[in-house]
Amino acid sequence: MAKKLAEIVENLVASFREHGGINHLDGSNLPSRDAVVEITRDLLRLMFPGFYDAESVHSEQVTEYTAELVASISRRLEKEIRKSLEYRPCPHCDRNDLAGTAARVTEEFLSELPAVRAVLQTDVVAAYEGDPAAISNEEIILAYPGIEAIAVQRMAHRLYQRQVALIPRIMTEWAHNKTGIDIHPGAEIGPSFFIDHGTGVVIGETTVIGKNVKIYQGVTLGAKSFPKDAHGRLVKGIKRHPNIEDNVTIYAGATILGDVTIGHDSIIGGNVWLLESVPPNTVVYQEGGQTKMKTAARVRDKMVGHADQ
Image (cartoon, rainbow, N blue to C red; front, side):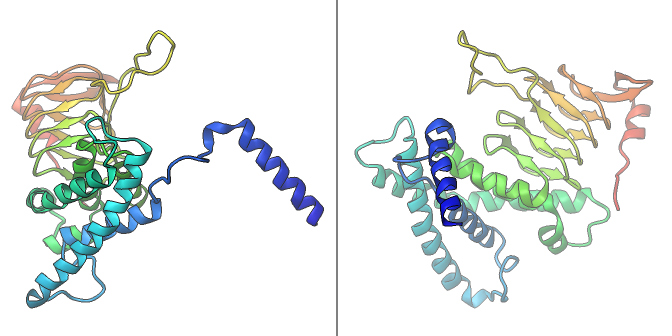
């Protein structure tokens, strides 16, 4: 057995040399996925105090509770951001003071959490008001996967804006694994956003979503094509995902691809495949295997039913 194990080790080490693209040897220490996940769990405790805790949190304890949690998150997050900067410094970072940059980014991020909470409150209200099956805000926070996915994305987006590598994507992919909702940390999402049911929702990196937008399960806001450079490599960092204006509803299974705009107060029907922009106050629906558009109230009235459970 020892001889066979030695052969296995030798073959694996040889594969490290042959297939170098999936090794990370002799480089900087990467952020720990497990550490980032635990930080994200604790950030959710700050976003929704008392909801993610094993014991109840009383108002007279909230200052001490918050101080301890913020101090713990700050210490751990700063360490992981430092690793991220060592792996890939942000363009405007002082490469000679990555520790100082990590401390500054951590402080800025934590300072923005009250603003994130304010927006999350609008998301919870939108879910309660938009779902006749919802009985309370408590049910929405504890049981609705969309709220958890949105909360994690809104926090990850703040790190993404500061060009912190790896950590924002680890956060949103953890939420994706838990909820079945895949929202890239780069997506810009306005207040009062509601994802109903949620399973299979995909929202791409350069998507821009306005306020009071509601989407159902299986919706994809994706890219239509992937331009390549002269060497055949994908061009990164270009706008390639949809823009969803205010007060839009997108029903289950709809697919909207490319840098198109869905005008405000529009409704996109179930299973619609859409590659073009839509004017405001438009209803897009499937009929006889074709995608059609109307603004007539008669069609709109047929589309506004809720798929509650």
